Length: 512
Image (cartoon, rainbow, N blue to C red; front, side):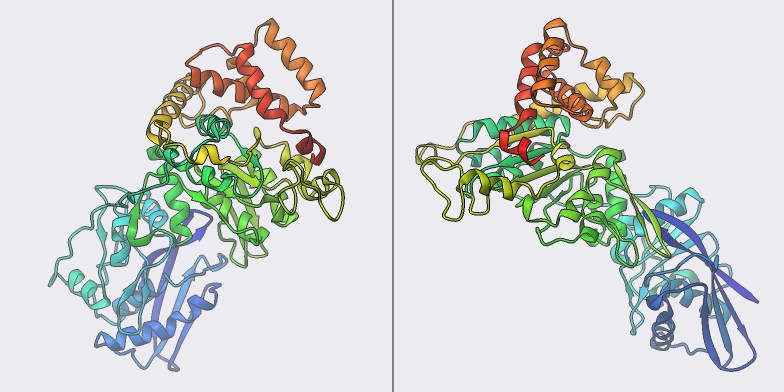
């Protein structure tokens, strides 16, 4: 007789069904596992054997064959331990053979029979619910699985013995409740920033429309401080966005205690990060920082210090909103619709723009040009706002904190986002679309210019050598500024401010 237990394999954030087939027959005493399993899955034999012994059971002195079907799909991860163990137990009669019907099972076993948390429980729960099945998962992952559906049966035991007692009816496990991560107190606030009014204005525009932002300024000017306060003015995730973000973080194993949050991701990798760390990949095509920043912010401090190849890998996801990671045995598509915020110094020492400063190695202009030449033109062209962040003077630092904090700015950003949501819903676009993500055809309709505005952008396109992408991004930026003003029309004033941000400095254009 063959016992079957349902589990899943992950391709990107999609959970594909896998059938764990267990057969115990006469023959040589051997435990064979087949089905294109990786090292972690192959080692499950010893974990299963030890967990069963710790639970008071012993493997029979027979030939045990475990097949993971479909056999041509790569299987990786430790979540196959529990379905394999339950299949063996059903085959030897330790649990009823029909007890696992209608359930998807995943979990890692300890040598003492404890069930350890695993990655990917939320996508597995969503997939099981779509197939009309329940879910058996580790106790720590139960609150995460409970988000899939309030009507779905979720069993979340701490140990193999506890699960067996539940299946036999001698112990009843309560359904876990969805958990929400508590918001930490004392988050960075706009009220902490003294001075830098123009930079705060640019940050507000970037948040309102989801635009990419590049800040250029000397060390200590507050660029990182500004970026760290961007999440405090962004609107919370919508239910659809929350599900997408949580599924990515679940596959990456970054949901602690099964607690979800509606705060937008803020990822700030070190400049030593490789291309695989940013874009995703590795031997098992894992999601990278750009996917973990989906529907949130990716902050790259010291931008020119990143590897050029790693930075250029961001160009395609910035346009398409997703990234395809291909390996010899893996092919995964991860969502990657993120807001890129970057900070950089004008040169290696950072003081080339200071009054009276003279570089000892070469003229200041050449020093600046060589440092900023590390950034490719196509990458620079994808920044909607490029601003100079000057050093803060002592006169600003001795002033009392500003009266306006993140709450007031967040209210204006939320109102602008709400205008965008209603506008794009009427056009048949996703409700969570922003001006930055709107297609060119839509932005030409909703940012229609009058005669003076058309003349201004025509002249600016020639003087600033705007590409077709740059032309449409300037329109998107002007549309966002108009939304912040509560204006249905994009006026010449809105366009002029957008072009001032879009044009950037002469040094940025030289680097491009």
